[in-house]
Image (cartoon, rainbow, N blue to C red; front, top):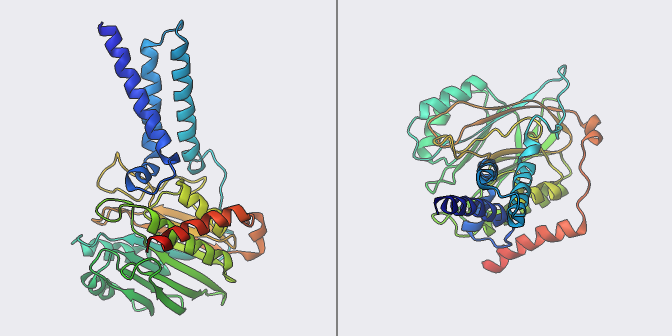
Length: 356
């Protein structure tokens, strides 16, 4: 009886792992489904553990055990396939920079609005001395302390301080122009759209976003987030300038939405081939995944990307150094999206419009 009980428990453990693996395939936008897009690394470990433990009671004469193990192996392979592009085993999606070229750098941080350790952030971004700074979850108090600590070289800025945890501040040593603040899906969720003049006198387009997460206390469905990401993806696709999209996406890079975002926008992920760079949750080592992103067009190459030290927030800041090498863009250019892919993106935008 004890042996049967142990096997039953192992089967339940394995079944849970299988169900959690299949959840992201459910074509619904409810938060309790979409939240399972996030922990693929954790689910890979969970499913692998379920597979290994099941061998304790594996019956070589029982065909059902073979079926169960095969399904578990399939789940492990599926989970690992999601993570694989962000391991050192995979090829770089963004090639290394020419070391002889001048770089420009971007520092991004979700500061956590209620975080009171403002001095940690100010000290850190001054150490990195990036060309462009982006801060999300910033209210007036944050703006006051950040601007007080800014080097005078940050002459260009776009400031949208808000008390709803969706405030956004951008500062730049490089000239910003045609800078606009848009509210794509809500009059309380801003995004900053600006052109940047590089030191080479070339113009690039930067989009800074912070869509809402699919969580019950924020938004019961992922429709708003997905729609905003698709709107930005289409803007990036249609831009006549090289594009950089930065911010806290409240989505992981391997989700269906982020994969579609890349296919539509043709933008590249600097993480691929280099690492996960899990920026969230800084407070929980077991529940970490990459939520803060930088996607770039094929005109750019990467010198370095770094997850920075803790600044008291629940997110780690991200620091990225890039070079502008448009003459080599064809070496890493993604294909133009098909009509089917564009329709899927438009369907997500339409789903938001119908919800309004």
